[in-house]
Length: 408
Image (cartoon, rainbow, N blue to C red; front, side, top):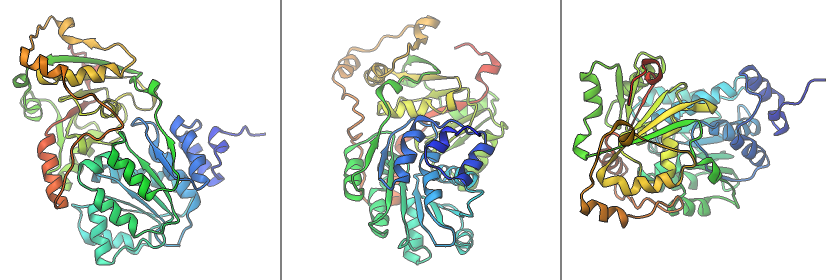
């Protein structure tokens, strides 16, 4: 008698189990184990989990099981960036191969004609960025009156980009009787208000505090003056490194070209803004460099989670400006693993001026349940422009650290 797999115990049906088995998936990640049965029962979910822990499967497998083919659009997944939307689509298509369910991706920067062709094939699931989805809704090329499942992925990023009103507009066009799941690295007040307004007694499935260690990641940091930080992408190019960049002002073709080069190892280093990089799943990333520290501790753990995917080992280095030492100390308090002090290891002395020391002592405390304080108003494009200009380069990921044996 064949032994029941752990995925089978979650209530998934055979056609999905066969797909998972073919892909070599036998043991669910904790977020999947806790979330899949809840969504299959028709309950709403607020989820908070590390990047690289199978979040997409956690919400897409129940959706694939509960919707029907040839019944119109029944599932919508909203994501903040084009790259994440395309990645989610790719994952869902992999799980859906035995179901007959079609998926379409709707995002800005791609020609409307291509998306209209995809919609004519009558997909059951839409993965979309909010702005372009609203464009289609206003044109009448998409209708959401038959939606039974709605997912908000990386909700805190969509909040920072000024998308909350857009999300509310979209959800208002869907039936009240639907299963909704919201996924976010942090849970600011605006996100919780969105949940209260649009969700029905959601089950909260949050990452345990013990998981905030970045286990499996060798973490280190270097304190230096702001002016000592170079223009990353330009410096790497001058040094002859195979590097690519992605950021908000680039055309979609250039962004996709950069990601393809990095995924296929034609480039060793990817330089990305925080928003552009959120949710990108690239296996075997050896090193993550935080060019600037993030504004909240949970975002730090999501960033470094670009390495050590799915239980592998990796390394993360954070460059800490003198003016950011206070915030960095708050992040260090959340980790349960010893970090390497590169100043001490390399004999690099630093002396923080007294005014900055006093500022560090009185800085705001990081609180993953509170907003980052960044609220945007005005036109959607204006909010995106302001966000991209302010974020600049946030972190770097590279495949080649371990193979080249560089000393830090």
